[in-house]
Length: 337
Image 1 (cartoon, helix red, strand yellow):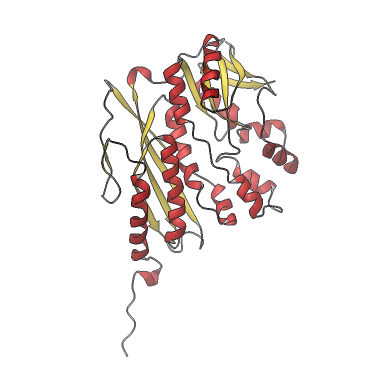
Image 2: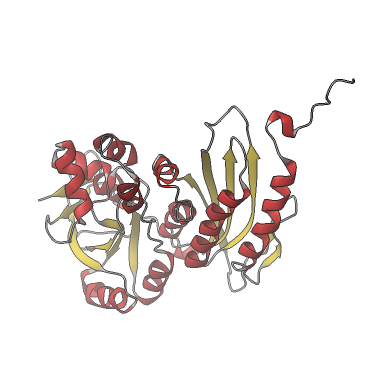
């Protein structure tokens, strides 16, 4: 009797499962299409022409992952929201520059491909693209037996946006007296989960995991509407490092943002984390977004109009502080008092 011939499937890679996944993805990606897409899912590369109407278009690119929040998806068996997180982390960064995100690509890597599970993840990615107004035009699925633990996967995403060169937002026009607007977050978003998991390690069941899996809010359409309605001086995406780590990135030298404690509501989940972990206020502020996922800096004269526009769009937003001149500072900072 002849020895059994090995196949790629025997080594842990199932090409048929991968092909089946591609067919499932195609209708999901079609829902996100924009008229500028020339070639999408299925080719060796996605083709996209620059949207019309730009005189000096500048491309803005961003990439990110979801981090250890994925561990909660594995625990809860809930895979349809982490794709939204994946899109959010990149598109929210891109829009900070004043750019419109136009295309997104994903990378999904796992030890053994389960087409049903992967389809849930990519369904979330497509939903995130719809919320951001960008097209899912490609991606990569990698089956890496022995590299990841069985039943686990990792995600990465890549976004391209476009902005008129004269409308790039880089913080250079921020000045003393400007108002800082904070847009409410939906929870932890995709940062601080290593600490949150450590705090709850003895009580982290599927129910709490599902609560923590609330997806990252996508601010793209609200930010673009605000940019078009008022003279926005800067946006800041509040991710890892919290308000103290991200808001200074758009402040000029010799300036600081003075934020008023209690000027915005902090979701209860942050109090639960702080109490369970006996964490200091400063540690919470530099680890979590504390209820503010995006900031906009505008002149004080434009503040009422900006807050009114966001309210009409259903985005909770608050005046949380102001920009101050601080000539002696070595670098920009945030103070919360």
